[in-house]
Amino acid sequence: MRLGAPLFSAPDDPAAIAAEHRRLGYGAAYCPKVTLADGDRVRAIREAFAAADVTIAEVGAWNNMLDRDEAKRTANIDYVCERLALADEVGATCCVNIAGSRNPTRWDGPHPENLSEEVFEVIVDNVRYVLDTVRPTRTRFAIEMTPHTLPDGPEAYRRLVEAVDRPAFAVHLDPANVVSSPRRYYDTTSLLRECFATLGPWVVSCHAKDTLMHEALTVHIDEVRPGLGTLDYATFLTELSRLPGDVPLMLEHLETAEEYAAGTEYIRRVASEVGLAFNGA
Image (cartoon, rainbow, N blue to C red; front, side, top):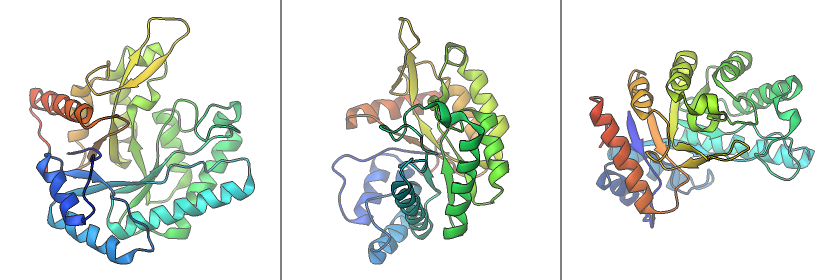
């Protein structure tokens, strides 16, 4: 396993960025800011991070591949292709997005069509198009599970992987995204075991977050810093450690360097308690 997080006040030089990750004890990183057109910087990032033994965990694509507006949808999918090509050139573990949404005002919002069979088929076509256009050789393309878009759980994700039927399509696992009911919230151990049992052969990268449910009607579950919720990190890390290779585990969505430091410390402490350690630290 490799642990990583965003940097605050990051330097611009690729070698300095990689060195800062090592100083903080991280063996994995988000891809530094770069475009595919800047070939010299892409090459410098790839070489500097390899020399420092810091894995570039992911290149984010983060847009709506299901936008109702045809022009926007086409532009979004073209951007995803560009980001996947960048991930391949920079040597990242994966390029990651979500499937998108039919919601007209929020790119990742809920909509009744999101869970339909028709949208499932569109997602399959979109993923195949991206992979067949780019044909990556060093990286994978993945989309995350979310509570109100497909795939919305491990079985739905496995069905999508099998339907896409491309070796470069993989799983980016963010289990906190599908802690979407009291049943899952109070038994994240079973959810995590199901995720790894169902998706383990395809998991190439993970996000580290936590969830906290409010004591009010109706159900409301917030995303919080690792250690402030109920996600069973002992099981998460144990299952992750059993996968082949150094799978990155990346913290995200926190506001300050201090929060990331606290989340990192918590994850490292749990890892130590179950007899595990992170490579590249």
